Length: 360
Image (tube, rainbow, N blue to C red; front, side, top):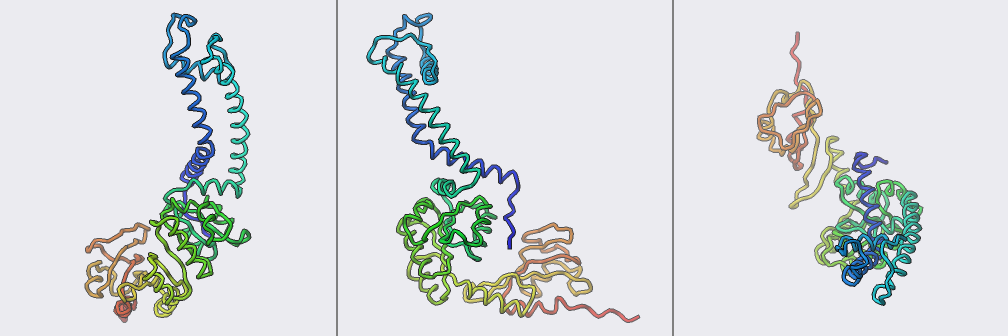
């Protein structure tokens, strides 16, 4: 299996940098707030209370005050010590603050970068807690890994939850820079670790219908606005859940694939099949072959004569034309993406038949 999503190298590197920056900001947020507050307070105290007579030119600007405060944090002494109980503590506390900044910052940053390089479980947890407007995928089986691949193709941020650390596709999903959390998808704490309250959607595709349903309902409790899509093996139950429980999508993968298998037996050109408005709609590929009746014709002829919808025309040279113009000429080697019902498939059957060659 295993085609990775088509992400180019530059985009991949940019995404990694963005994730690293996001995690570093979250991890150091409290520390940075305290540091900025301390710097602001010391700057203000020096500016308003430090004796001007001790300064060159008896002048002191707010920028000078900030600069001197920063120097004192990093063990410089640009100002003369004064016996003023409002200022004296700063001469002792600012260097201590600088020492803590260096010690704590270097150790913590080093640990974070080490975990980032290994893409450890701890790092993935930290990334997950920083996610916003993302999709949570529950279950990394055959369906789950495909869902993640498609979401990444659409450049969606994803957090995955899997109960089995030894599951087959865990390392593959992690290679897409998707954080994977391990635990029970029904556990509210686990969903909170995946930032479910900030997520835009949850897709529950484990092999347990009740687990999928419970995960969906728990997610809806934690985030009433979240979009919910679940996989259910029982098609009748899936429809009831979708109709009566406020879930946007409940699908039976076996029921959907059964329709595709049946239609594929009728025509090998069918790419996908789905139901809309009580009608089975098929997406099919039509290859323009030599010596067939449609060679040299135009798109509009095919649309009108066979009553089908043509979404895309791929030329022999690889050029793709979405919503092709009615006057586009059909040439040998062209591929058409066609949407039609079952009757349309039957109407198109003569299109692929070879014309009788004239006898010499």
